[in-house]
Length: 229
Image 1 (cartoon, rainbow, N blue to C red):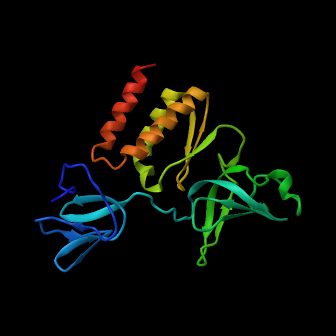
Image 2: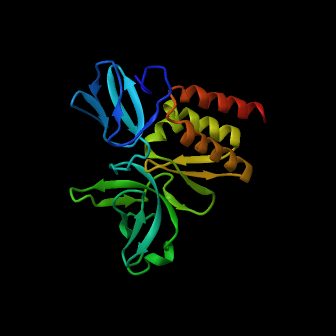
């Protein structure tokens, strides 16, 4: 089998590509079986696990769920609410009743304007896919410092590590604050050198997150960075 054998590095496949294998496999996500051939239906990394052939997407889509922590950009302001771009198919709506301040009708722009960045939670997602946000809660606020970086949502678990261990280690060795949103955005606050260090870990995850031994590689990079300090 080419590229999906257990222990081998996964290879990139494209829609319509025939996957050559002499093994009998089950068809998983991103794979169809037609005319005695396994065919990729998406672009991504070919993977075999427990006899199932599948394709992990290069870039996943964020699907909001109630309770998600998200980082958004204010895109529009009305008299009684804000519209936030949250890296999904639909904007998040933040009513003034769910803002962290007492807001008078028509004064929304005095508190937040277009281009402001927020940490919020998804309050609810209704059947029409309208996403209601809230900024009432611990840690939810308008961001005034630091920077925001992006990563594919399919890589979030690998970036965070088991029980958020990677994030804790990165924050410790870089002396930064790190908040990871479920919508693939990461807020980093600290000194420029520390922020740059976390950016390097983000880039490393983007480049190597599909590797079979990524967790080991990431820990080695953590140890190397700690040893250089």
